[in-house]
Length: 106
Image (tube, rainbow, N blue to C red; front, side, top):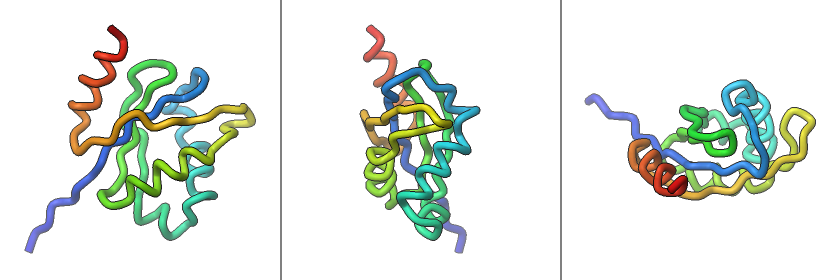
């Protein structure tokens, strides 16, 4: 039996400009601190896109999106800088998040 892996995509707004690609390991370390190592490895969060300097997308295994959102709200420092994250939207496709982000710009 072949099972297709399902993901959820979370659109995140940072309180300040951040290069999510280069800060990915630091963000991941902070998420692991709040989620715990086992849950972090099961959730497998990955930064997959950045739309603006403050807006980016995290891919997470389905069923763990609520824990990711909760953990993101506790992150207050990344790479020695004070920064906060808020979740704008969660979706099953990255395309719908792109459309939502484009509407926010207009």
